Image (cartoon, rainbow over all chains, first blue to last red):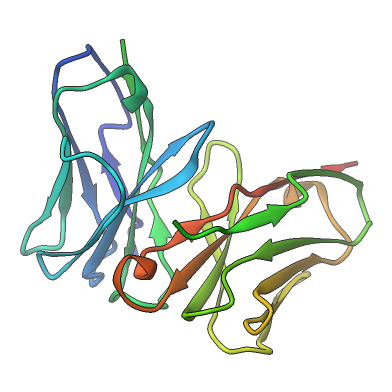
Length: 113
Length: 114
């Protein structure tokens, strides 16, 4: 069974631009969560989607948004990029929300210059 | 903001040593506690999901215990091997509202020296 895939793997953007990251969950998984990992902050929760609905949102500004499609694939968008948005963005999928194991993708490394 | 703390921050052990780390989390509104292993240049790998007070789980040489009343979990590695070198993360999930999101600790970085 294929794992969680994320595209692109690496990305370099300029301040003020916007970016869209994509995540394809494991087949059959309906829940997708997004996390930001920075050296100083560790792994921080961004959003959780289940059946195309946002179930939970972390403490991030409105520049960070996401969505989930009917095939469970998810995208996250960051508008008006800032230098501090440079991070590794991980998505994770699980069968449903709750205490099920989450399976992480390889991440997208975003660098904002 | 939920506080999930892990100690120690980093640890160096010799091959064959047994070791353990601690994860502290809020003792109220507990729903689940997750443990992950994160090797460099790889994705975090789920080790355990623990939901009941007193839970003990084991996978090979790695085991974990859970005390929800006092808000801590221990991860044990018996007979450490160089391939166990990784960052071990715990994550807390609470009941209701924003507590339902997974809140991660900062991790324990383990290095096993051959």
